[in-house]
Amino acid sequence: MRFKFLLIFLMISFSSFALAAEPAFKSGETIRYTVKQGFLKVGNATLEFKGETTLDGKTLDLIVFTAKGIGFFDEERIYIDPVSFLPFRVIRTLDIPGERSKIQEDYFPDQELIQVTKEMGGKTTVQKIEKKGAVDNIYGFIYRYRLKADLKSVDVFEVNLPTVDVKIKKVKEVEFNAGSKMYRAALMRSVPEKYSIWFDVSEKRLPLRIAGAIGMANTVMTMLGVDDK
Image 1 (tube, rainbow, N blue to C red):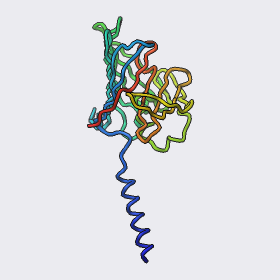
Image 2: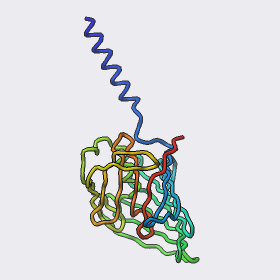
Image 3: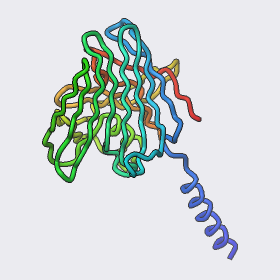
Image 4: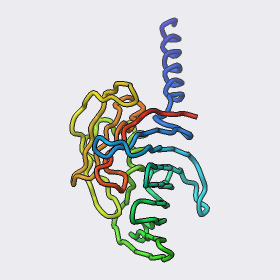
């Protein structure tokens, strides 16, 4: 009888622990990065998970990426479905040499369509891109990877972006220093070669380094630290 009560107690305790387990990230998390081109630091960036918001009557999650430095500013406000982490709308403000623009991408998966509205130099243009299947966003993919525990053993991910479809493959695990702290990291690379991402292999799955995500040549972001609110 004593053993039976002990077994029940352990089962209840384990269930409570599982329910109380911390998610890989939560609203208010801000990841800080240094931005380099080659060996030269050109700026800083932040990746923020803002959490739940409402847009066009829909309940969505908001991710905000901001990069800035001498001569450039890049902000993406990415509104994603809270379950699939696929984009509903992306609003990008870009100010780089030769281009100052605002770009809005609206996703209509039921119509297999992406509408891109671009404001630049006082002119507005609208482009419609036909795209079959689920269309991703690189930051939406990063957060979905971090959230889904069942992805840990998967080595290849198909990521369909608006203008290119890639497969992101796990290349190897390495020791990686970020923010003066050593991590065990999984190096992921896309085919065709467009992105490289180093993910912390702990339960947080922090994106320690991201290469190729900013609209500038040979740009690499390396994590400096994480702020949780």
